[in-house]
Structure formats: C-alpha cells, structure tokens
Amino acid sequence: MKVFGNALSTTIPGIVSLGDIIHGLTWKKLIDPADKEAIEARMKAKTRTCPICGEDVAPSISEVFSAIFIMPNRCQCEVDQYLEEERVDAFHRHQAAIEEYFPFQKDISEEYSAMKFDNFDQEQGTKAALIKAWTMAQKFHVFVKEGKGLFFHGMSGSGKTHLAVAITHSLLSQGKAVAFCEWSTWQTEVKKTWNRRSKVDESYLLNLLIGSDLCVLDDVGVLRKDKWGEFPVTLSPDEERSLFMIVNKRILKHRPTIITSNLTDLEFEMAVGKRIHDRVTGKSLVEHLKRDKSYRQGGQG
Ligand SMILES: Nc1ncnc2c1ncn2[C@@H]1O[C@H](COP(=O)(O)OP(=O)(O)OP(=O)(O)O)[C@@H](O)[C@H]1O
Ligand SMILES: [Mg+2]
Ligand SMILES: [Zn+2]
Image (cartoon, rainbow, N blue to C red; front, top):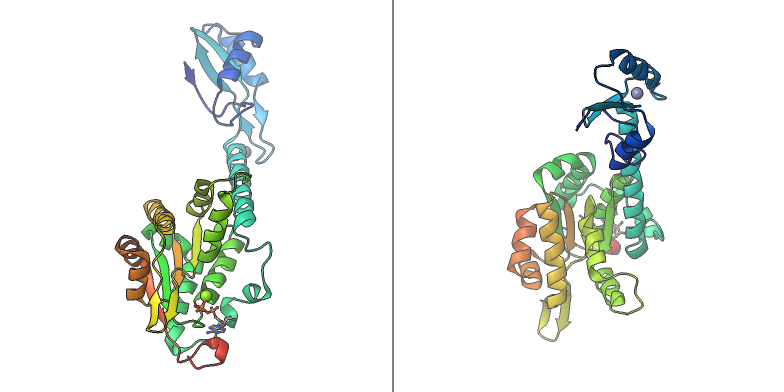
C-alpha cells in the first residue's frame, strides 16, 4: 500500500491509520485507477484550505488492492502545530509531576524567589562560577550538545544554591522542564514511597529527575562533626545507587545536571564514591566557590 502526504487522520496527523484505511474501504468509494476523471473530481472535492496558512492542501492518494482512495490531507503547519501542542502538554504534565514531589514553584520560599542573577554580587572568589552559571542559563543548548553540567562546591554560604536557583528560574521561564531537588528531599521522598499506600515507587521519582531537561541536585554530601574533626558522610548504598542512576542516565542522554556540595573535591569523592565522582567531575564544568566567610555572616568574597 502506498500512502502520500499528511492524511487527515483522526488519531495522529501525518500518518494514515489503520482506522482511516478501514473507514476508506468501507465508506469511501474506491476508484478504478484507470478512471482519471473520477480521480480528478475526487481530488478537487477533497482539497481543503489550511486554516493556519490559508493555502490549498491537496488530498492524499492511497492505493489499496489495485484501487485508489482519496482522503483530505493536513497541511504541514497543522501537523507542526499539533506536535507543538503535544510537546507543550507533555512538558506541563512532566513539570506538574515534578512539582508534586520536588516543589520549586509551588511553595517557593521568599529566599528562593529572590535568588536571581541580577542580585548576585560579583566577587573575586565566585566570579568564575557566576560566569559559568550565566552561560548555562543563556546557552543551555550548548551544554546539552556537549552533554555537560555544573559541579559547584565550596564552603557554606558561598552562593552555590543562589546560582543554581538563578539558573532554574531562567530555564523555567524559557519553557524547559527543570527538577530542583535538595538531596535531603530525595531521601525523604524515597522513604515515602515505601509506604504501601504510596501512589508511586522509587523508579517513578527517578524518572522525574532523569527525564527533566535540567536536574539540580542541591547539597549532595554532608559533613559529620565529632571530637576528632569533620568527616564526609558516605552515602548509603541505596542513596549511592539512586545518585548513580540519575547521574549516569542523564549523561548518556546528554541532559545537563547541576550538583552543589559544600564538600571539597576530595571529600565529595569519599562521600559519593569513585564512579559517581568520576562521572560528575568528568562531565561538568567544575568550580570551587571561595569566600573568606559565609555570605550569611556578611563576609567578603
Ligand atoms: N555573591 C552573592 N551575592 C548576593 N547574595 C549572595 C551571594 N552569595 C550568597 N548570597 C546569599 O547568601 C545566602 C547563602 O547563599 P547560598 O544559599 O547560595 O549558599 P550555599 O553556598 O548554597 O551554602 P550551603 O552550602 O550552606 O547550602 C543566600 O541568601 C544567598 O542569596
Ligand atoms: Mg546551598
Ligand atoms: Zn498551512
């Protein structure tokens, strides 16, 4: 069977469905290929005007069992509009699901809503991170093409979350699906799925993070203080497996990830293990944010 053009299918535009063919066979008159006059008359009758561009849209001609049937067609701009609506719908469904489990816009705190590029003071120790963050927000497609993310580490109060939130605001306003997940929230949400009344399981949450255009994992790895000093807390095997899946799958799909941590590079490696550390540092622009004191304490950059 040969099918030409974007037939006016009731299911998917651009594709003649089995339903269309059965409909055509049972309800539309099949034309003898030798009957040029009948073909021409049917072609004329089935030509439609595209409601978007106003051009005439020639019908599609199909050959079935040595007979011909002619059906109205969709214009390419109608197909494009349909696909764009589908894409926007899928985006809203995905973003709504993210917001349900990892709310960013829904219950945005005053602190997060204030974290923008234009109120980030330019300081020596964090300037390079600011430039990288700004570049990601402006040229996200380049990061996608190169399959690169950002890894910001440095002391508490140095502006890591501020920059990650500023990128999130910017990309959300550009219509990108962004999952912003504080790592402690990940653990809480996963534990909730263990309840047998939970509507979702861990793989659903993983897919929310893996499927987003950008995924921010804020504050990965913590320090524990005891009488001998401060030590990075190693991730639990469950956490390590989840983090590995998120990082690795996103790298394979060329989806940028931002990771922030107040551990040093070495401590981060001790906390997350060699395999995750290697992937994160190898596939990210890495920046160590430096200040003499936390911004919260009013120190200098
Ligand atoms: N350069 C800066 N300009 C303006 N505000 C800043 C700057 N750096 C940090 N801040 C502000 O200081 C506070 C702490 O910054 P942020 O939360 O980004 O720190 P952090 O590096 O993520 O720290 P932590 O490791 O404790 O999470 C925030 O309110 C943030 O808006
Ligand atoms: Mg932070
Ligand atoms: Zn058109």
